[in-house]
Length: 242
Image (cartoon, rainbow, N blue to C red; front, side, top):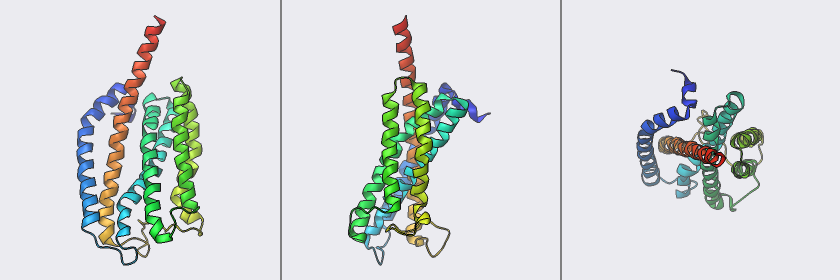
């Protein structure tokens, strides 16, 4: 069986219809387990108090905001190289999900930063690149809506995705590129001195798994919707020409 078989819209819908119930179930279990464990069964931090528990929403949403754009980049490259419509529609489907994840990360970061930094916002390298990434999400979605021809829209949004990937990478590694800034270093690190305590780390991993599964489920569902919408537009266009 070839991976490219799933570029067939019918094959994609049939396969995801079978997979989606399981993904939704695992999503619910992971999110409920991780959030309840994190918010109700972990201690307050000795420095940040109960504020640290925002980590269970902020970190997973920030990770998915960045990785959603990288997923869109891969799908866009597949479209450019192989012209598979499912990949272009998957990238389009992922954009609103990634935008919401970015907005959640920005909002929870503000709520976390205010008591820690004394301000809701700072023009920190990571925060600034994250805000620009959010604007790229909005521009990407607007470009899809502004162009009637789907193939032309896929071409132009793919180019925009390539450019926006710079800010996705900066959002992830800004703390490493610039020493200045209020934002802390990596929460999940191989360096034991930087990595958070296991009491926070394990529920955080469960929350991250839940957010990843939620992203997959939403992208599958939205891609199915995009495929059906494209079919509907094609049928209407044929009827108009008849």
